[in-house]
Image (cartoon, rainbow, N blue to C red; front, side):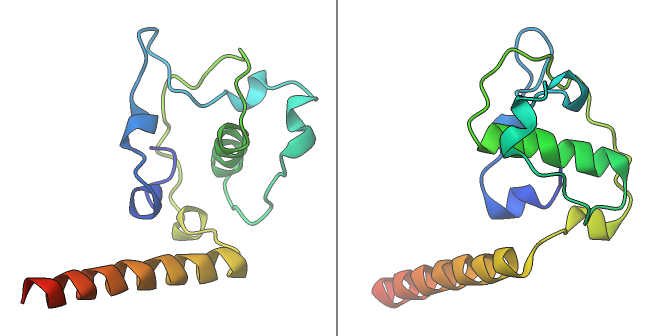
Length: 115
């Protein structure tokens, strides 16, 4: 998995499965063309270069990239900084809190109905 925190935000297990060619679905940063970068933003909030590249690959996929650039074949575990793993904007933090609250509300409703 590119970033370990993703497993808590959305079901991402299938994104880390390799295809028959031994590739992930994420495009390799260095294989993207200039036009591919038009809708992507380099996030300077990351400390390591590998985290910045993984973020661009993740953004490309999330924004609908279906090109035929070379894909990532190995995930380097060089993201040692907790700051890189949890690089959220304030807006994203608020959305996470809202999602978490919705899950708690659903859980509490289920608990009441089962009682």
